[in-house]
Amino acid sequence: MANVYLCLGSNLGDRRQQLIDAIVHLSEKAGTIPAFSSFHESPPWGYSSPRLFLNVAVHLVTPLLPVELLAVTQQIERSLGRIAKSNTDQYTDRLIDIDILLYDDAVLQTPDLIIPHPLMHERLFTLQPLAEIAPAIIHPVMHQPVSELLQSALSHAANSSNTCLL
Image (cartoon, rainbow, N blue to C red):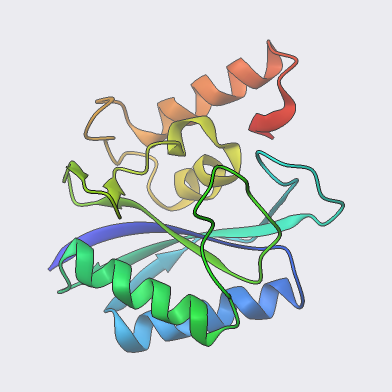
């Protein structure tokens, strides 16, 4: 069994219900969920939209291998109305997004999946809910606990005019 941390987000429709539905599907199809964070609202990251995101971090204990988990998360996204993941660097509004942040201490890079998530350390909307449920978990590449990554991101956001971190 692997300990996995996910970040779920939605900025279309009933955002809270979309996230709850995704958590239920994950528990039915992917494993057990010992913890999830409170819901965090944040502006879109990497593009402009008037619609705020609602995000939640989820701790999942799963027997699935990383590629199997990716297939399950994508199937859940489709079942909840997501048309397709972006194949470009252009982000868009979405009903549901499920990102695999950490899978035990695995480091994996394939054309379809990178673990740990390559941008998680830059995103407050990921780090804030993750730090709520797993502050001591060590990033397997950066070798820092999530709580320290969050403090670095907060410090960078405070000292920068780059609002993309928010």
